[in-house]
Amino acid sequence: MNKQERIELALEKHKNRHNCCQCTLAALADLAGVDGNDLYKLGAGFAGGMGNANGVCGALVGAVMSLGGATNGNGTVFTARELSESFRKKCGSIICRELKGLDTGKMLCSCDDCIANAVEAYCEVTGIE
Image (cartoon, rainbow, N blue to C red; front, side, top):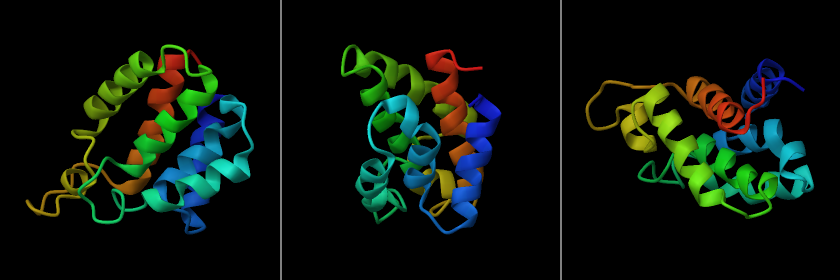
């Protein structure tokens, strides 16, 4: 599956009312080398910036979770840092509350855009076209 197909899969999941983390996990599960259903269940609690919009965007969390499987835990923290920075540049923040503009009234990035940007950033740092 190429980058665009992964983004489309993630956005389709979002249309079907799955949370941002689950959408990203669904698009990247095969790369993590683990069962997609288990990842999907693990991602359930990361909706809405960990339930209160104060946490890291769930789409980014899903991408970082997938990195752990893809790297077999070796050097994951360095790749996660690179992925997070790529996401921040694309979206303007990594914090759900800031992305949604809950305090400022100015949305930086929609959920669909966060999902697409998380998958795209993952693909960039792992070399997927």
